[in-house]
Image 1: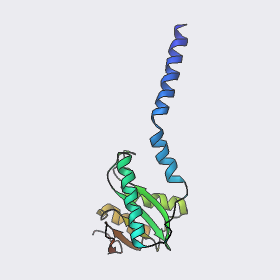
Image 2: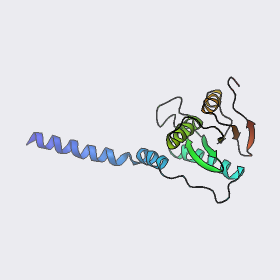
Image 3: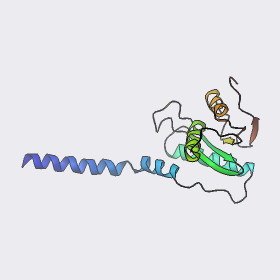
Length: 153
């Protein structure tokens, strides 16, 4: 009888814990679905989406950064900072967006893409954009064009 009570309590605890974690699952599921597109593609619409990703990062309890990747005026990847969510110091919004885009396109070559970020990419993120073949970096609330990514700033 005691064993049954312990197992029942463990089962209830597992159900309770699973019910407490839907936000993380929702974060993952949200990233994998189709990407909604702006009605009229334009630099400021893409910057707005990068800032939407920034808002999601804050909502999920992560660092306040967001990024999207666009090819031929179509958003092909997007993400928010996942450093805290994934306990990964390299999971900046820009790198997470590059990873997601590469997975969605099944290619590590993102030649011709433009990355829009909520803030200026750090040297690590700029190097990642360089190695991915991203053509241009645009960042900040006014859409500053930083040109092509470079290695070592």
